[in-house]
Image (cartoon, rainbow, N blue to C red; front, side, top):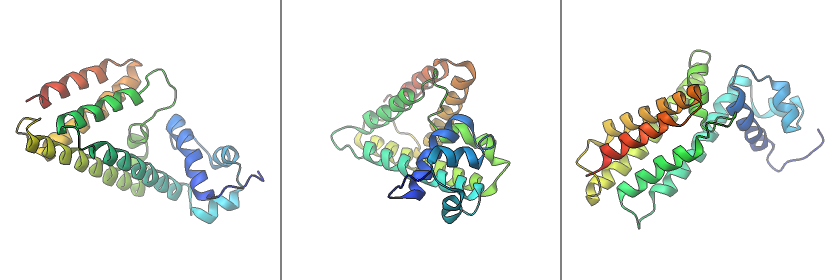
Amino acid sequence: MNTRHDNTRQHILDTGLGIFAGKGFASVGLNELLKAAGVPKGSFYHYFESKEDYGKALLEDYFGRYLADIDSLFALEATSGHERLMRYWQRWVDKQCTECAEQKCLVVKLAAEVSDLSDAMRLTLRDGTDRIVDRIAGAIEGGVADGSLPALEARPTAQLLYQLWLGASLLGKLHRNSQALENAMRFTRQLLTP
Protein backbone atom coordinates (compact mmCIF):
# COMPACT_ATOMS: atom_id res chain seq x y z
CA MET A 1 0.00 0.00 0.00
CA ASN A 2 3.00 2.32 -0.08
CA THR A 3 2.88 2.80 -3.85
CA ARG A 4 2.67 6.50 -4.77
CA HIS A 5 0.65 7.79 -7.70
CA ASP A 6 0.94 11.23 -9.28
CA ASN A 7 -2.81 11.63 -9.13
CA THR A 8 -4.22 9.39 -6.42
CA ARG A 9 -7.81 10.47 -7.05
CA GLN A 10 -7.57 9.55 -10.74
CA HIS A 11 -5.80 6.30 -9.88
CA ILE A 12 -8.68 5.30 -7.59
CA LEU A 13 -11.17 6.15 -10.35
CA ASP A 14 -9.20 4.22 -12.99
CA THR A 15 -8.89 1.19 -10.73
CA GLY A 16 -12.58 1.24 -9.87
CA LEU A 17 -13.71 1.47 -13.48
CA GLY A 18 -12.66 -2.08 -14.26
CA ILE A 19 -13.91 -3.47 -10.97
CA PHE A 20 -17.34 -1.80 -11.05
CA ALA A 21 -17.76 -2.48 -14.79
CA GLY A 22 -17.20 -6.15 -14.07
CA LYS A 23 -19.05 -6.64 -10.79
CA GLY A 24 -21.52 -3.79 -10.50
CA PHE A 25 -21.76 -1.14 -7.82
CA ALA A 26 -23.48 -2.75 -4.84
CA SER A 27 -21.38 -5.91 -4.80
CA VAL A 28 -18.03 -4.13 -4.50
CA GLY A 29 -16.92 -2.98 -1.09
CA LEU A 30 -14.49 -0.17 -0.39
CA ASN A 31 -11.89 -2.60 0.96
CA GLU A 32 -11.80 -4.44 -2.37
CA LEU A 33 -11.39 -1.19 -4.27
CA LEU A 34 -8.72 0.16 -1.95
CA LYS A 35 -6.76 -3.09 -1.97
CA ALA A 36 -6.79 -3.17 -5.78
CA ALA A 37 -5.76 0.50 -5.95
CA GLY A 38 -3.11 0.04 -3.29
CA VAL A 39 -4.20 3.10 -1.33
CA PRO A 40 -5.24 3.52 2.31
CA LYS A 41 -8.80 4.29 3.36
CA GLY A 42 -7.78 7.80 4.39
CA SER A 43 -6.79 8.58 0.82
CA PHE A 44 -10.20 7.51 -0.40
CA TYR A 45 -12.00 9.75 2.09
CA HIS A 46 -9.67 12.62 1.27
CA TYR A 47 -11.07 12.64 -2.28
CA PHE A 48 -14.58 11.21 -1.84
CA GLU A 49 -17.11 11.75 0.95
CA SER A 50 -18.75 8.35 0.48
CA LYS A 51 -19.04 5.39 -1.86
CA GLU A 52 -21.98 7.17 -3.52
CA ASP A 53 -19.85 10.28 -4.06
CA TYR A 54 -17.18 8.03 -5.54
CA GLY A 55 -19.76 6.40 -7.84
CA LYS A 56 -20.88 9.81 -9.07
CA ALA A 57 -17.27 10.85 -9.71
CA LEU A 58 -16.59 7.54 -11.48
CA LEU A 59 -19.53 8.12 -13.80
CA GLU A 60 -18.54 11.74 -14.46
CA ASP A 61 -15.01 10.60 -15.34
CA TYR A 62 -16.37 7.83 -17.58
CA PHE A 63 -18.66 10.22 -19.45
CA GLY A 64 -15.88 12.78 -19.82
CA ARG A 65 -13.66 10.23 -21.55
CA TYR A 66 -16.50 8.75 -23.59
CA LEU A 67 -17.65 12.15 -24.84
CA ALA A 68 -14.09 13.17 -25.73
CA ASP A 69 -13.80 9.95 -27.74
CA ILE A 70 -17.07 10.64 -29.55
CA ASP A 71 -16.02 14.24 -30.22
CA SER A 72 -12.77 13.13 -31.83
CA LEU A 73 -14.57 10.50 -33.91
CA PHE A 74 -17.26 12.91 -35.08
CA ALA A 75 -14.68 15.63 -35.83
CA LEU A 76 -13.19 13.66 -38.73
CA GLU A 77 -13.84 16.17 -41.49
CA ALA A 78 -12.74 13.94 -44.36
CA THR A 79 -15.72 11.64 -43.78
CA SER A 80 -19.44 12.12 -44.28
CA GLY A 81 -21.93 12.25 -41.44
CA HIS A 82 -23.12 8.78 -42.44
CA GLU A 83 -19.58 7.37 -42.28
CA ARG A 84 -18.93 8.97 -38.89
CA LEU A 85 -22.14 7.54 -37.42
CA MET A 86 -21.58 4.07 -38.84
CA ARG A 87 -18.01 4.13 -37.50
CA TYR A 88 -19.41 5.01 -34.07
CA TRP A 89 -21.88 2.13 -34.12
CA GLN A 90 -19.23 -0.31 -35.40
CA ARG A 91 -16.95 0.79 -32.57
CA TRP A 92 -19.83 0.06 -30.17
CA VAL A 93 -20.11 -3.49 -31.56
CA ASP A 94 -16.35 -3.99 -31.35
CA LYS A 95 -16.22 -2.87 -27.70
CA GLN A 96 -19.12 -5.04 -26.52
CA CYS A 97 -17.34 -8.37 -26.23
CA THR A 98 -20.02 -10.88 -25.25
CA GLU A 99 -17.46 -13.43 -24.12
CA CYS A 100 -15.89 -11.02 -21.64
CA ALA A 101 -16.97 -11.06 -18.03
CA GLU A 102 -16.13 -7.37 -17.82
CA GLN A 103 -18.78 -5.08 -19.24
CA LYS A 104 -17.24 -2.34 -21.34
CA CYS A 105 -20.09 0.15 -21.05
CA LEU A 106 -20.59 1.51 -17.55
CA VAL A 107 -24.03 2.83 -18.54
CA VAL A 108 -25.21 -0.64 -19.52
CA LYS A 109 -23.73 -2.14 -16.38
CA LEU A 110 -24.90 0.36 -13.77
CA ALA A 111 -28.02 2.16 -15.03
CA ALA A 112 -30.65 -0.25 -13.75
CA GLU A 113 -28.69 -1.09 -10.60
CA VAL A 114 -27.99 2.37 -9.24
CA SER A 115 -31.05 4.26 -10.47
CA ASP A 116 -33.05 3.07 -7.46
CA LEU A 117 -30.12 3.25 -5.01
CA SER A 118 -28.72 6.71 -5.62
CA ASP A 119 -30.45 9.75 -7.03
CA ALA A 120 -27.09 11.50 -7.47
CA MET A 121 -25.76 8.65 -9.60
CA ARG A 122 -29.06 8.38 -11.49
CA LEU A 123 -28.88 12.06 -12.40
CA THR A 124 -25.25 11.70 -13.48
CA LEU A 125 -26.23 8.78 -15.72
CA ARG A 126 -29.20 10.71 -17.10
CA ASP A 127 -27.17 13.82 -17.85
CA GLY A 128 -24.30 11.83 -19.36
CA THR A 129 -26.56 9.85 -21.66
CA ASP A 130 -28.35 13.07 -22.67
CA ARG A 131 -24.98 14.49 -23.73
CA ILE A 132 -24.25 11.35 -25.76
CA VAL A 133 -27.62 11.68 -27.51
CA ASP A 134 -26.81 15.34 -28.20
CA ARG A 135 -23.55 14.31 -29.89
CA ILE A 136 -25.35 11.70 -32.01
CA ALA A 137 -28.03 14.26 -32.93
CA GLY A 138 -25.31 16.68 -34.02
CA ALA A 139 -23.75 14.02 -36.22
CA ILE A 140 -27.16 13.27 -37.73
CA GLU A 141 -27.67 16.98 -38.47
CA GLY A 142 -24.27 17.05 -40.14
CA GLY A 143 -25.11 14.01 -42.24
CA VAL A 144 -28.45 15.46 -43.32
CA ALA A 145 -26.68 18.71 -44.23
CA ASP A 146 -23.97 16.95 -46.29
CA GLY A 147 -26.56 14.73 -48.00
CA SER A 148 -25.17 11.44 -46.70
CA LEU A 149 -28.24 10.81 -44.50
CA PRO A 150 -31.94 10.99 -45.31
CA ALA A 151 -33.96 13.90 -43.93
CA LEU A 152 -34.34 12.77 -40.32
CA GLU A 153 -35.37 14.63 -37.19
CA ALA A 154 -32.01 14.64 -35.45
CA ARG A 155 -32.89 14.55 -31.74
CA PRO A 156 -35.71 11.93 -31.87
CA THR A 157 -33.64 9.74 -34.21
CA ALA A 158 -30.58 9.99 -31.97
CA GLN A 159 -32.71 9.10 -28.92
CA LEU A 160 -34.22 6.11 -30.72
CA LEU A 161 -30.85 4.82 -31.87
CA TYR A 162 -29.21 5.23 -28.48
CA GLN A 163 -32.07 3.40 -26.78
CA LEU A 164 -31.87 0.65 -29.41
CA TRP A 165 -28.15 0.17 -28.83
CA LEU A 166 -28.40 0.20 -25.04
CA GLY A 167 -31.14 -2.41 -25.22
CA ALA A 168 -29.15 -4.50 -27.68
CA SER A 169 -26.15 -4.39 -25.36
CA LEU A 170 -28.27 -5.61 -22.44
CA LEU A 171 -29.74 -8.42 -24.51
CA GLY A 172 -26.26 -9.36 -25.70
CA LYS A 173 -25.26 -9.77 -22.05
CA LEU A 174 -28.34 -11.88 -21.30
CA HIS A 175 -27.93 -14.18 -24.29
CA ARG A 176 -24.14 -14.06 -24.36
CA ASN A 177 -24.08 -13.62 -28.09
CA SER A 178 -23.95 -10.78 -30.59
CA GLN A 179 -27.34 -11.31 -32.25
CA ALA A 180 -29.01 -8.25 -30.68
CA LEU A 181 -26.08 -6.03 -31.66
CA GLU A 182 -26.15 -7.42 -35.19
CA ASN A 183 -29.89 -6.64 -35.35
CA ALA A 184 -29.23 -3.12 -34.05
CA MET A 185 -26.58 -2.61 -36.74
CA ARG A 186 -28.91 -3.90 -39.47
CA PHE A 187 -31.72 -1.56 -38.36
CA THR A 188 -29.31 1.38 -38.02
CA ARG A 189 -28.00 0.84 -41.55
CA GLN A 190 -31.55 0.73 -42.91
CA LEU A 191 -32.59 3.86 -41.04
CA LEU A 192 -29.52 5.88 -41.99
CA THR A 193 -29.31 4.91 -45.64
CA PRO A 194 -30.42 7.75 -47.91
